[in-house]
Length: 478
Image 1 (cartoon, rainbow, N blue to C red):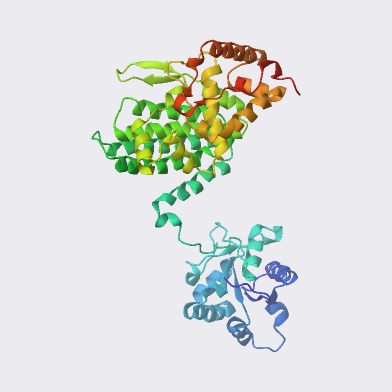
Image 2: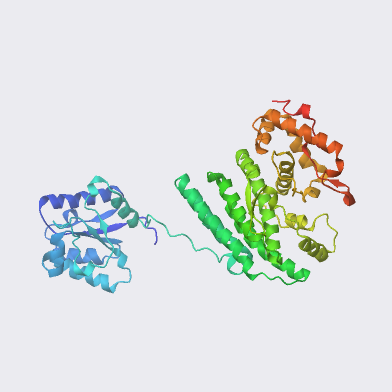
Protein backbone atom coordinates (compact mmCIF):
# COMPACT_ATOMS: atom_id res chain seq x y z
CA UNK A 1 0.00 0.00 0.00
CA UNK A 2 1.47 3.33 -1.13
CA UNK A 3 1.64 6.31 1.19
CA UNK A 4 -0.64 9.23 0.20
CA UNK A 5 0.61 12.69 1.13
CA UNK A 6 -2.60 14.56 0.28
CA UNK A 7 -5.67 12.29 0.35
CA UNK A 8 -8.86 13.45 -1.35
CA UNK A 9 -12.23 11.77 -0.84
CA UNK A 10 -15.76 11.99 -2.15
CA UNK A 11 -18.55 11.19 0.32
CA UNK A 12 -21.56 9.35 -1.09
CA UNK A 13 -24.61 9.19 1.20
CA UNK A 14 -28.40 9.16 1.17
CA UNK A 15 -30.29 12.40 1.80
CA UNK A 16 -32.31 11.96 4.93
CA UNK A 17 -33.35 14.20 7.83
CA UNK A 18 -31.35 17.15 9.13
CA UNK A 19 -29.81 15.20 12.00
CA UNK A 20 -28.39 12.66 9.60
CA UNK A 21 -27.09 15.37 7.24
CA UNK A 22 -25.41 17.07 10.20
CA UNK A 23 -23.77 13.77 11.18
CA UNK A 24 -22.38 13.45 7.63
CA UNK A 25 -21.22 17.05 7.78
CA UNK A 26 -19.50 16.41 11.09
CA UNK A 27 -17.56 13.46 9.64
CA UNK A 28 -16.50 15.60 6.69
CA UNK A 29 -15.31 18.34 9.06
CA UNK A 30 -13.36 15.82 11.15
CA UNK A 31 -11.63 14.58 8.01
CA UNK A 32 -10.86 18.11 6.82
CA UNK A 33 -9.32 18.95 10.20
CA UNK A 34 -7.13 15.85 9.82
CA UNK A 35 -5.79 17.02 6.47
CA UNK A 36 -8.11 15.07 4.17
CA UNK A 37 -9.57 17.06 1.25
CA UNK A 38 -13.30 16.25 1.12
CA UNK A 39 -15.75 16.57 -1.78
CA UNK A 40 -19.19 16.89 -0.15
CA UNK A 41 -22.35 18.07 -1.85
CA UNK A 42 -23.20 20.25 1.14
CA UNK A 43 -20.29 22.57 0.36
CA UNK A 44 -19.05 21.50 -3.08
CA UNK A 45 -22.31 21.49 -5.06
CA UNK A 46 -23.18 25.00 -6.30
CA UNK A 47 -26.70 26.28 -7.08
CA UNK A 48 -27.66 25.47 -10.66
CA UNK A 49 -25.01 22.72 -10.94
CA UNK A 50 -26.18 19.37 -12.33
CA UNK A 51 -26.39 16.94 -9.39
CA UNK A 52 -25.72 13.79 -11.42
CA UNK A 53 -22.84 15.35 -13.33
CA UNK A 54 -21.31 16.37 -9.99
CA UNK A 55 -21.69 12.85 -8.63
CA UNK A 56 -20.25 11.18 -11.73
CA UNK A 57 -17.30 13.58 -11.91
CA UNK A 58 -16.55 13.12 -8.20
CA UNK A 59 -16.67 9.32 -8.40
CA UNK A 60 -14.56 9.02 -11.54
CA UNK A 61 -12.15 11.92 -10.82
CA UNK A 62 -8.58 10.41 -10.85
CA UNK A 63 -7.49 12.95 -8.21
CA UNK A 64 -10.02 11.44 -5.78
CA UNK A 65 -8.05 8.82 -3.88
CA UNK A 66 -11.07 7.25 -2.14
CA UNK A 67 -14.85 7.23 -2.30
CA UNK A 68 -16.51 6.86 1.12
CA UNK A 69 -19.89 5.14 0.84
CA UNK A 70 -21.88 5.98 4.00
CA UNK A 71 -24.36 3.14 4.44
CA UNK A 72 -27.64 3.29 6.31
CA UNK A 73 -30.98 1.43 5.70
CA UNK A 74 -32.23 4.08 3.27
CA UNK A 75 -29.00 4.10 1.24
CA UNK A 76 -29.02 0.29 1.03
CA UNK A 77 -32.69 0.20 -0.08
CA UNK A 78 -32.21 2.87 -2.76
CA UNK A 79 -29.00 1.24 -3.99
CA UNK A 80 -30.69 -2.14 -4.40
CA UNK A 81 -33.70 -0.53 -6.17
CA UNK A 82 -31.49 1.85 -8.17
CA UNK A 83 -33.76 4.69 -7.19
CA UNK A 84 -33.12 8.40 -6.68
CA UNK A 85 -29.71 10.02 -6.46
CA UNK A 86 -28.31 7.06 -4.57
CA UNK A 87 -29.52 4.81 -7.37
CA UNK A 88 -27.69 6.90 -9.90
CA UNK A 89 -24.54 6.98 -7.76
CA UNK A 90 -24.84 3.23 -7.31
CA UNK A 91 -24.88 2.69 -11.04
CA UNK A 92 -21.77 4.83 -11.39
CA UNK A 93 -19.97 3.36 -8.39
CA UNK A 94 -20.88 -0.27 -9.07
CA UNK A 95 -19.63 0.07 -12.63
CA UNK A 96 -16.37 1.51 -11.33
CA UNK A 97 -16.10 -1.21 -8.67
CA UNK A 98 -16.45 -4.00 -11.19
CA UNK A 99 -14.29 -2.57 -13.95
CA UNK A 100 -11.47 -1.00 -11.94
CA UNK A 101 -8.46 -3.03 -10.86
CA UNK A 102 -8.06 -0.76 -7.80
CA UNK A 103 -11.27 -1.66 -6.02
CA UNK A 104 -9.84 -0.44 -2.70
CA UNK A 105 -10.71 3.10 -3.84
CA UNK A 106 -14.31 2.50 -2.68
CA UNK A 107 -14.70 2.14 1.08
CA UNK A 108 -18.05 0.96 2.48
CA UNK A 109 -18.79 2.59 5.86
CA UNK A 110 -21.60 1.48 8.15
CA UNK A 111 -22.95 4.85 9.28
CA UNK A 112 -26.28 3.72 10.73
CA UNK A 113 -27.66 0.21 11.29
CA UNK A 114 -31.12 -1.27 10.78
CA UNK A 115 -33.41 -1.37 13.79
CA UNK A 116 -32.64 -5.07 14.21
CA UNK A 117 -28.87 -4.34 14.30
CA UNK A 118 -28.15 -5.82 10.85
CA UNK A 119 -25.50 -4.04 8.78
CA UNK A 120 -27.23 -2.37 5.79
CA UNK A 121 -24.99 -3.54 2.96
CA UNK A 122 -26.42 -3.26 -0.57
CA UNK A 123 -26.13 -6.33 -2.78
CA UNK A 124 -23.12 -5.13 -4.77
CA UNK A 125 -21.14 -4.53 -1.57
CA UNK A 126 -22.13 -7.64 0.38
CA UNK A 127 -18.75 -9.34 0.10
CA UNK A 128 -16.62 -6.24 0.71
CA UNK A 129 -14.75 -5.37 3.88
CA UNK A 130 -16.20 -2.30 5.61
CA UNK A 131 -15.51 0.14 8.45
CA UNK A 132 -17.99 0.74 11.26
CA UNK A 133 -18.40 4.48 11.98
CA UNK A 134 -21.81 4.40 13.65
CA UNK A 135 -20.27 5.96 16.76
CA UNK A 136 -17.40 7.89 15.23
CA UNK A 137 -18.46 10.99 17.17
CA UNK A 138 -17.24 9.27 20.32
CA UNK A 139 -13.78 9.17 18.75
CA UNK A 140 -13.64 5.40 18.41
CA UNK A 141 -10.65 3.60 16.96
CA UNK A 142 -12.35 2.86 13.65
CA UNK A 143 -12.20 6.55 12.69
CA UNK A 144 -8.44 6.48 13.27
CA UNK A 145 -8.28 3.29 11.22
CA UNK A 146 -10.05 5.09 8.35
CA UNK A 147 -7.74 8.11 8.44
CA UNK A 148 -4.64 5.86 8.51
CA UNK A 149 -6.00 4.02 5.48
CA UNK A 150 -6.66 7.28 3.61
CA UNK A 151 -3.02 8.25 4.16
CA UNK A 152 -1.80 4.82 3.08
CA UNK A 153 -0.62 4.03 6.60
CA UNK A 154 -2.42 0.81 7.67
CA UNK A 155 -2.68 -0.04 11.37
CA UNK A 156 -0.84 -3.33 10.83
CA UNK A 157 2.10 -3.02 8.48
CA UNK A 158 3.12 -6.07 6.48
CA UNK A 159 6.72 -6.99 7.41
CA UNK A 160 9.42 -6.96 4.76
CA UNK A 161 10.16 -10.22 3.01
CA UNK A 162 13.13 -11.91 4.68
CA UNK A 163 15.72 -14.27 3.27
CA UNK A 164 15.66 -18.04 3.15
CA UNK A 165 16.61 -19.45 6.58
CA UNK A 166 19.94 -21.23 6.82
CA UNK A 167 18.25 -24.31 8.28
CA UNK A 168 16.43 -24.96 4.98
CA UNK A 169 19.67 -26.12 3.39
CA UNK A 170 21.70 -26.89 6.51
CA UNK A 171 20.25 -29.24 9.15
CA UNK A 172 22.78 -27.91 11.68
CA UNK A 173 20.86 -24.65 11.75
CA UNK A 174 17.53 -26.33 12.54
CA UNK A 175 17.78 -24.85 16.04
CA UNK A 176 16.92 -21.44 14.55
CA UNK A 177 13.35 -22.73 14.62
CA UNK A 178 13.56 -23.39 18.33
CA UNK A 179 15.06 -19.98 19.09
CA UNK A 180 11.86 -18.39 17.86
CA UNK A 181 9.63 -20.96 19.49
CA UNK A 182 11.21 -20.80 22.93
CA UNK A 183 11.34 -17.00 22.84
CA UNK A 184 7.53 -17.14 23.22
CA UNK A 185 8.14 -17.90 26.91
CA UNK A 186 8.91 -14.20 27.42
CA UNK A 187 5.45 -13.27 26.15
CA UNK A 188 3.47 -15.46 28.56
CA UNK A 189 1.50 -13.29 30.94
CA UNK A 190 1.89 -15.21 34.19
CA UNK A 191 4.34 -17.45 36.03
CA UNK A 192 1.92 -20.37 35.77
CA UNK A 193 1.60 -20.03 32.00
CA UNK A 194 5.39 -19.83 31.63
CA UNK A 195 5.83 -22.89 33.84
CA UNK A 196 3.31 -24.92 31.86
CA UNK A 197 4.82 -23.89 28.54
CA UNK A 198 8.33 -24.69 29.83
CA UNK A 199 7.13 -28.16 30.91
CA UNK A 200 5.67 -28.70 27.45
CA UNK A 201 8.92 -27.72 25.73
CA UNK A 202 10.99 -29.87 28.10
CA UNK A 203 8.77 -32.87 27.33
CA UNK A 204 9.28 -32.32 23.59
CA UNK A 205 13.07 -32.19 23.89
CA UNK A 206 13.13 -35.18 26.23
CA UNK A 207 11.07 -37.15 23.73
CA UNK A 208 13.48 -36.27 20.93
CA UNK A 209 16.39 -37.29 23.18
CA UNK A 210 14.80 -40.67 23.88
CA UNK A 211 13.56 -41.26 20.33
CA UNK A 212 17.11 -40.95 19.04
CA UNK A 213 17.88 -44.27 20.77
CA UNK A 214 15.56 -46.05 18.35
CA UNK A 215 18.21 -46.11 15.62
CA UNK A 216 20.67 -47.65 18.09
CA UNK A 217 22.71 -50.69 17.34
CA UNK A 218 24.43 -53.06 19.73
CA UNK A 219 27.05 -54.08 17.17
CA UNK A 220 30.59 -52.84 17.34
CA UNK A 221 31.30 -49.73 15.29
CA UNK A 222 34.46 -48.24 13.84
CA UNK A 223 35.81 -45.04 15.36
CA UNK A 224 34.57 -42.86 12.49
CA UNK A 225 31.07 -44.34 12.86
CA UNK A 226 31.07 -43.61 16.60
CA UNK A 227 32.15 -40.03 15.95
CA UNK A 228 29.47 -39.61 13.28
CA UNK A 229 26.76 -40.80 15.68
CA UNK A 230 28.11 -38.53 18.40
CA UNK A 231 28.10 -35.50 16.10
CA UNK A 232 24.42 -36.15 15.32
CA UNK A 233 23.55 -35.90 19.02
CA UNK A 234 24.89 -32.33 19.09
CA UNK A 235 21.66 -31.14 17.43
CA UNK A 236 19.68 -32.44 20.40
CA UNK A 237 22.15 -30.84 22.81
CA UNK A 238 21.81 -27.44 21.17
CA UNK A 239 18.02 -27.64 21.11
CA UNK A 240 18.09 -28.37 24.84
CA UNK A 241 20.45 -25.44 25.40
CA UNK A 242 18.17 -23.05 23.51
CA UNK A 243 15.44 -23.86 26.02
CA UNK A 244 17.74 -23.59 29.04
CA UNK A 245 18.39 -19.94 28.21
CA UNK A 246 14.99 -19.13 29.71
CA UNK A 247 15.41 -20.80 33.11
CA UNK A 248 15.61 -17.41 34.84
CA UNK A 249 12.03 -16.46 33.92
CA UNK A 250 10.42 -19.78 34.94
CA UNK A 251 9.82 -20.26 38.69
CA UNK A 252 11.15 -23.61 39.89
CA UNK A 253 12.81 -24.29 36.55
CA UNK A 254 15.64 -26.25 38.19
CA UNK A 255 13.15 -28.79 39.59
CA UNK A 256 11.60 -29.29 36.16
CA UNK A 257 15.01 -29.68 34.51
CA UNK A 258 16.43 -32.14 37.06
CA UNK A 259 13.24 -34.19 36.86
CA UNK A 260 13.67 -34.33 33.08
CA UNK A 261 17.34 -35.35 33.40
CA UNK A 262 16.36 -38.03 35.89
CA UNK A 263 13.74 -39.42 33.49
CA UNK A 264 16.17 -39.43 30.57
CA UNK A 265 18.83 -41.13 32.68
CA UNK A 266 16.38 -43.85 33.75
CA UNK A 267 15.73 -44.66 30.10
CA UNK A 268 19.43 -44.71 29.22
CA UNK A 269 20.86 -46.36 32.32
CA UNK A 270 19.83 -50.00 31.64
CA UNK A 271 21.21 -49.76 28.09
CA UNK A 272 24.80 -50.32 27.07
CA UNK A 273 24.68 -49.80 23.30
CA UNK A 274 26.89 -47.31 21.48
CA UNK A 275 24.14 -44.72 20.98
CA UNK A 276 22.90 -44.90 24.57
CA UNK A 277 26.48 -44.40 25.80
CA UNK A 278 26.88 -41.37 23.55
CA UNK A 279 23.63 -39.89 24.87
CA UNK A 280 24.83 -40.42 28.45
CA UNK A 281 27.89 -38.36 27.51
CA UNK A 282 25.61 -35.62 26.15
CA UNK A 283 23.59 -35.71 29.37
CA UNK A 284 26.87 -35.32 31.29
CA UNK A 285 27.71 -32.28 29.16
CA UNK A 286 24.22 -30.81 29.50
CA UNK A 287 24.39 -31.08 33.28
CA UNK A 288 27.60 -29.00 33.28
CA UNK A 289 25.94 -26.40 31.02
CA UNK A 290 23.00 -26.29 33.43
CA UNK A 291 25.29 -25.55 36.37
CA UNK A 292 27.07 -22.89 34.28
CA UNK A 293 23.78 -21.18 33.41
CA UNK A 294 22.47 -21.02 36.97
CA UNK A 295 25.84 -19.90 38.35
CA UNK A 296 26.13 -17.21 35.68
CA UNK A 297 22.63 -16.00 36.61
CA UNK A 298 23.63 -16.10 40.33
CA UNK A 299 20.76 -18.49 41.10
CA UNK A 300 22.37 -19.94 44.21
CA UNK A 301 19.23 -21.43 45.74
CA UNK A 302 18.46 -23.24 42.49
CA UNK A 303 22.05 -24.56 42.32
CA UNK A 304 21.68 -25.87 45.86
CA UNK A 305 18.46 -27.66 44.84
CA UNK A 306 20.20 -29.29 41.88
CA UNK A 307 23.19 -30.47 43.91
CA UNK A 308 21.18 -31.63 46.94
CA UNK A 309 18.37 -33.39 45.08
CA UNK A 310 18.07 -37.15 45.59
CA UNK A 311 17.75 -38.86 42.22
CA UNK A 312 15.74 -42.09 42.10
CA UNK A 313 17.49 -44.36 39.64
CA UNK A 314 16.31 -47.56 37.98
CA UNK A 315 19.05 -50.19 38.03
CA UNK A 316 19.64 -52.93 35.47
CA UNK A 317 17.97 -55.29 37.96
CA UNK A 318 14.76 -53.21 37.81
CA UNK A 319 15.17 -51.91 41.35
CA UNK A 320 15.38 -48.31 42.50
CA UNK A 321 18.28 -46.63 44.26
CA UNK A 322 18.66 -43.12 45.63
CA UNK A 323 21.71 -41.42 44.19
CA UNK A 324 23.34 -38.00 44.02
CA UNK A 325 23.81 -35.78 40.96
CA UNK A 326 27.10 -37.65 40.32
CA UNK A 327 25.09 -40.19 38.31
CA UNK A 328 25.30 -37.74 35.43
CA UNK A 329 29.08 -38.07 35.25
CA UNK A 330 29.79 -40.63 32.52
CA UNK A 331 33.07 -42.24 31.51
CA UNK A 332 32.85 -43.13 27.82
CA UNK A 333 36.08 -44.96 26.93
CA UNK A 334 35.05 -45.81 23.35
CA UNK A 335 34.30 -42.22 22.46
CA UNK A 336 37.47 -41.11 24.24
CA UNK A 337 39.60 -43.42 22.10
CA UNK A 338 37.73 -42.52 18.90
CA UNK A 339 38.52 -38.81 19.39
CA UNK A 340 42.17 -39.46 20.18
CA UNK A 341 42.46 -41.79 17.17
CA UNK A 342 40.82 -39.25 14.87
CA UNK A 343 43.15 -36.43 15.91
CA UNK A 344 46.21 -38.59 16.54
CA UNK A 345 46.56 -36.77 19.85
CA UNK A 346 47.01 -38.12 23.36
CA UNK A 347 44.59 -35.67 24.95
CA UNK A 348 44.28 -35.37 28.71
CA UNK A 349 40.59 -35.93 27.89
CA UNK A 350 39.40 -36.26 24.31
CA UNK A 351 35.80 -35.70 25.40
CA UNK A 352 36.71 -32.50 27.26
CA UNK A 353 38.59 -31.36 24.15
CA UNK A 354 35.47 -31.96 22.03
CA UNK A 355 33.26 -30.08 24.51
CA UNK A 356 35.56 -27.07 24.45
CA UNK A 357 35.88 -27.12 20.64
CA UNK A 358 32.11 -27.31 20.14
CA UNK A 359 31.22 -25.00 23.05
CA UNK A 360 27.92 -23.21 22.56
CA UNK A 361 29.16 -19.69 23.29
CA UNK A 362 25.65 -18.26 23.27
CA UNK A 363 25.12 -20.13 26.53
CA UNK A 364 28.39 -19.55 28.39
CA UNK A 365 32.09 -18.87 27.97
CA UNK A 366 34.78 -21.53 28.16
CA UNK A 367 35.81 -20.33 31.62
CA UNK A 368 32.21 -20.50 32.85
CA UNK A 369 31.88 -24.04 31.52
CA UNK A 370 35.16 -25.17 33.10
CA UNK A 371 34.20 -23.56 36.41
CA UNK A 372 30.81 -25.31 36.33
CA UNK A 373 32.58 -28.66 35.96
CA UNK A 374 34.83 -27.73 38.91
CA UNK A 375 31.76 -26.74 40.99
CA UNK A 376 30.29 -30.20 40.40
CA UNK A 377 33.52 -31.67 41.75
CA UNK A 378 33.53 -29.34 44.80
CA UNK A 379 29.90 -30.21 45.54
CA UNK A 380 30.68 -33.93 45.31
CA UNK A 381 33.41 -33.46 47.93
CA UNK A 382 31.98 -30.90 50.35
CA UNK A 383 28.25 -31.53 50.28
CA UNK A 384 26.87 -33.46 53.24
CA UNK A 385 25.38 -36.82 52.43
CA UNK A 386 27.02 -37.02 49.02
CA UNK A 387 27.37 -40.41 47.34
CA UNK A 388 31.10 -41.27 47.41
CA UNK A 389 30.69 -44.49 45.43
CA UNK A 390 30.77 -42.63 42.13
CA UNK A 391 32.72 -39.34 42.36
CA UNK A 392 32.47 -36.46 39.95
CA UNK A 393 35.71 -36.13 38.00
CA UNK A 394 36.29 -32.63 36.50
CA UNK A 395 37.69 -33.70 33.13
CA UNK A 396 37.83 -30.10 31.84
CA UNK A 397 40.25 -28.97 34.59
CA UNK A 398 43.18 -29.14 32.15
CA UNK A 399 41.62 -26.08 30.46
CA UNK A 400 42.03 -24.09 33.66
CA UNK A 401 45.57 -22.91 32.95
CA UNK A 402 47.54 -22.81 36.18
CA UNK A 403 44.13 -23.29 37.85
CA UNK A 404 43.59 -19.55 37.61
CA UNK A 405 39.80 -19.95 37.31
CA UNK A 406 39.60 -22.11 40.42
CA UNK A 407 42.09 -19.91 42.26
CA UNK A 408 40.05 -16.75 41.59
CA UNK A 409 36.84 -18.48 42.61
CA UNK A 410 38.36 -19.77 45.86
CA UNK A 411 40.04 -16.53 46.89
CA UNK A 412 36.76 -14.65 46.48
CA UNK A 413 35.53 -16.68 49.46
CA UNK A 414 37.33 -14.19 51.67
CA UNK A 415 34.23 -12.07 51.03
CA UNK A 416 31.46 -12.75 53.56
CA UNK A 417 28.84 -12.32 50.85
CA UNK A 418 30.51 -14.76 48.45
CA UNK A 419 31.14 -17.25 51.24
CA UNK A 420 27.44 -17.15 52.14
CA UNK A 421 26.46 -17.77 48.51
CA UNK A 422 28.82 -20.72 48.05
CA UNK A 423 27.91 -22.25 51.40
CA UNK A 424 24.29 -22.11 50.24
CA UNK A 425 25.17 -23.80 46.94
CA UNK A 426 26.72 -26.73 48.80
CA UNK A 427 23.75 -27.07 51.14
CA UNK A 428 24.98 -25.32 54.30
CA UNK A 429 22.60 -22.99 56.14
CA UNK A 430 25.44 -21.35 58.08
CA UNK A 431 28.86 -20.43 56.77
CA UNK A 432 30.49 -21.82 59.92
CA UNK A 433 29.21 -25.30 59.06
CA UNK A 434 30.81 -25.10 55.63
CA UNK A 435 34.15 -23.87 57.03
CA UNK A 436 34.15 -26.73 59.52
CA UNK A 437 33.43 -29.26 56.77
CA UNK A 438 36.19 -27.81 54.61
CA UNK A 439 38.67 -28.21 57.46
CA UNK A 440 37.61 -31.83 57.93
CA UNK A 441 38.04 -32.64 54.23
CA UNK A 442 41.41 -30.88 54.09
CA UNK A 443 42.67 -32.87 57.07
CA UNK A 444 41.36 -36.11 55.58
CA UNK A 445 43.16 -35.60 52.27
CA UNK A 446 46.35 -34.56 54.05
CA UNK A 447 46.24 -37.92 55.82
CA UNK A 448 45.11 -39.84 52.71
CA UNK A 449 46.65 -38.00 49.71
CA UNK A 450 46.21 -41.00 47.41
CA UNK A 451 42.43 -40.63 47.63
CA UNK A 452 42.44 -37.27 45.88
CA UNK A 453 41.53 -37.36 42.22
CA UNK A 454 44.76 -37.06 40.27
CA UNK A 455 46.30 -38.03 36.94
CA UNK A 456 49.87 -39.08 37.83
CA UNK A 457 50.99 -39.42 34.21
CA UNK A 458 50.09 -35.78 33.61
CA UNK A 459 51.03 -34.55 37.09
CA UNK A 460 47.52 -33.07 37.43
CA UNK A 461 45.48 -33.04 40.61
CA UNK A 462 41.83 -31.98 40.56
CA UNK A 463 41.82 -28.66 42.44
CA UNK A 464 39.86 -28.09 45.67
CA UNK A 465 38.96 -24.81 47.37
CA UNK A 466 41.40 -25.21 50.27
CA UNK A 467 44.31 -25.44 47.80
CA UNK A 468 44.03 -21.64 47.32
CA UNK A 469 42.69 -20.21 50.57
CA UNK A 470 43.09 -21.01 54.25
CA UNK A 471 40.02 -21.54 56.36
CA UNK A 472 40.89 -18.56 58.61
CA UNK A 473 40.67 -16.29 55.54
CA UNK A 474 37.15 -17.43 54.63
CA UNK A 475 34.66 -14.61 55.17
CA UNK A 476 37.35 -12.35 56.60
CA UNK A 477 36.36 -9.39 54.38
CA UNK A 478 33.10 -7.54 53.80
